[in-house]
Length: 511
Image (cartoon, rainbow, N blue to C red):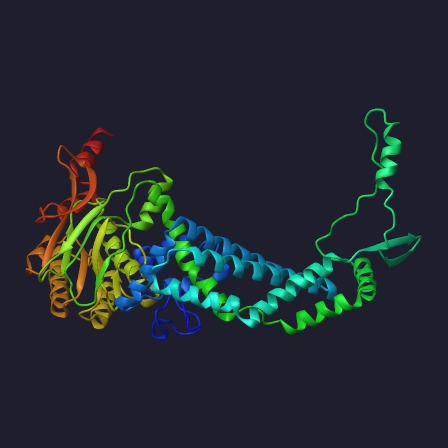
């Protein structure tokens, strides 16, 4: 039984022990929103660290692709959720056990938890045995759980559990209540006169009659009277209750560590596939991207920003998809165009696609080939921090300097509206220096800017422009296309900022 993990192909791929902080670029790319939605309702599994740890090996990513493809089978996916529900019930029973005060009550709950565990193992072993599996991860786990289910350790646990459950079900006793005393006795085939009494008085019934029978309240926890009764029942059935006590003592660590880890790790796939399901029902495409840690010739077709798609779906608004590609020695997208045209969304999408691909996840696109990076570095506009006594331009320079100091030829850089607080002359000068440095590093980059001059610096740069409806210039298509910058973006942005567009001027004249 050599199975190690359903998420990590080898121990080297695992994150370090302890807390794993959210990557600094998550907020810029809205990946924090995506992960929060995926993991909502699954706090018990602590899934966030898995989404905070990208993989750096292509085959490790293929390992996850294989598992996720297997889990796209509806029957297998349903069985995994059933298994998870059974173990969740088991854990909830154990939590309730910690809140109880009386020994026999604790033992009964422990036995219920073990019974749920044994049932879950049996069901999962059976369904995996019938499943048509192809992934290395699930095939290996099937071997492990099949061997585990046949092991002496588990078969003994299962047989003891079944016997004790049957023994407890056979316990019958009577209570004789006189005044303030209760006498507990074994049930000795005493006659139950309830049916005879009901039949006798049924003939005298005229219409609805008041029910004078006493109804016992079922409290969530055993009270002291019930505990005292159970103590006396335990004396009457000493052998059974002694066996239960010994069982609980000897099987306190019944939960197999590997299966417990599998239950947590497989939720990475379950949670993500559940998250994608509503998008897929609307017809949006998701794919397993090709990945390379060497070639920087990349492309995607019909890709979209997953965080924005969640917002638009809730509003029943259409989701616009975009394509992009870089070939030969192309490395940098300079994205320009009118405000509110989808430029920032395109930049976020570029980063999201690469990051989700590095997790071994399906990505929001019809097809794609992407680069396996060593790090993602982002620069998005932030509010000024008065505590550092720096102006906005200086703060931008400091942050971009940090990015360029960290970047390697395997990095991805995403920049949005750099040097927008400076003059056009300063922005062109500084932007040129930054882009030239990125070209020198040979990193992949998306830069959203109003500085059209940056598109002409090198043949490694691709100009991409957010488009409008030609006959209605104020209407955005949210499509980003490869074409030369039109030279209007910066002027229009300044005009809008200071209220100097034709529409804005006419409105002021009328007022």
